[in-house]
Length: 165
Image 1 (cartoon, one colour):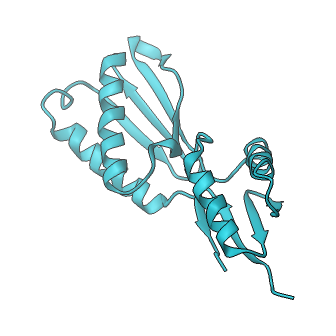
Image 2: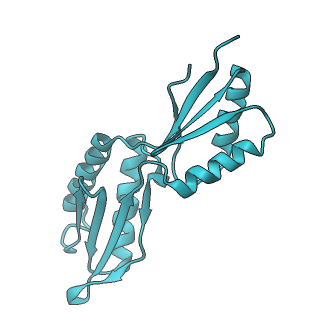
């Protein structure tokens, strides 16, 4: 009997590229004439995978988010990898915005992906392993169709397909 082929569905973010985009954003904030003397700052906590933007107004914070987003895109990071909270009022009339870097597939999303794959009515075996899913099947063509199906779906975070064998 032929061995099953499989691949893993993961959601990973290259933190080095995120850090590079953060450094470029910090440099641009200090050099751009409309942001230079505004008192706006951006911080990255690698351990917590969290961006913190402090700005004097909501408009300025949105500009910083736009600058960071453009840097992330240039670095090959999907914008779905960062989920932004609503702006919060901070001390001194400033605004604080938090951006969480989404990495790993949580259980609810994993179950939704599993259900969507099972609804395809083809012979697949899906295993949820911590923060990733392993999809196996006897047919490599069927696995290719699952990859294409998952690329067409939106689960609110970027998905990568690894260990295809």
